Length: 259
Length: 196
Image 1 (cartoon, each protein chain N blue to C red):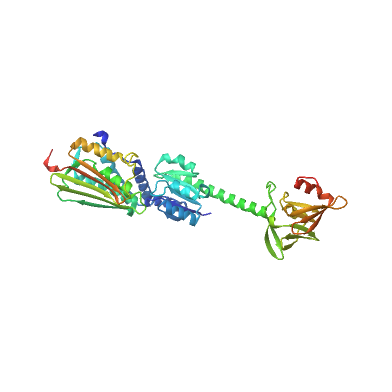
Image 2 (cartoon, rainbow over the protein chains, first blue to last red; image 1 turned 90 degrees about the horizontal axis):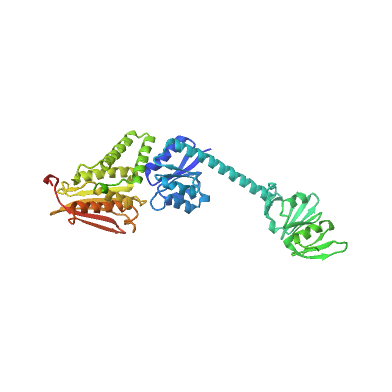
């Protein structure tokens, strides 16, 4: 893995000192050298480097102001470089990974770079994990520990892959080996089981009414009693569904009252 | 007078050492050696006890230019220095290390604080029995709290030393504004050859 780095210092030889040592490391590419805080902010936003070596004392905008401008949580892995010991504490407050004192000690530099490599790797793994979690939750195959299924359903409908907002779904009905999703004027026929779809939806929002029906609770307009302890469920759009005895308890739990 | 000696700024010293460290890391041994020699000159003159309270202006300027040379290596093309000394002024006797803190102030506040850099102009001339030395920069002027934040220490020392050496026979004038800062010092003209 090659790290992409930006070096920031108003003194040319100070920048060169970092760049020369990075070149020697072999796995770091200096994508830009910046001569001021202002140009550093631009460089970081433009190039999104993995790593930044940031001088503290610079004309105009100093190193701390750069972090404030970008926001500590959006900063690349940051190593402060300073002639002053007294900046060390503030550097860590600003969530710097490390700080180097001038003149730079090669061994100390190597250690800081090694920490930076590990931190960049951790961040990448973390970002990947978050990405996967987001994907899984969007497709409903949530992590067991994930308490909230996705707000979106990714479905294959008519040869396309559709990202459907759960909130847009009115109701869902079983149709043989398929389920039909009703979302406003749209109908999506998806090769899935009712159970699989149900698992992918937020249980506080979607309730099973029948072996063959799931409803978005927010779409229910009224409930009309039928004979034999069954109920008719009328939706805002006018659709009329049937609530079977078997699933009445679940709807009551969701609505918070007995029918 | 000993207590009023020039004080080295740690920032200058550590950044200079860092610059030398880079030259070594960059396999520029000759440049590193040159910079070490300049820094050593500078340290010798500032750390050693002075032989006399006064030196010829030419010697003082020579010393200042060694310092400037170090700063130019550090700051690169951001720092330009203009020197203009009247022919009859060079032999004048001036307090040892008088100009150093003033030029350093000009570089620190007038040049180093600006991304684009700037120019420091040093001029000296003789008018009758008075020697006038002027150090000017084209920066943003001094910060309002310049006298209290440590940057003024150098100048306070300059004033105190001039008072000890010349009593009322001297003037220090400071002008600071958008166009830059200018320090003008007037002291009695005494030639180095003329003795006491």
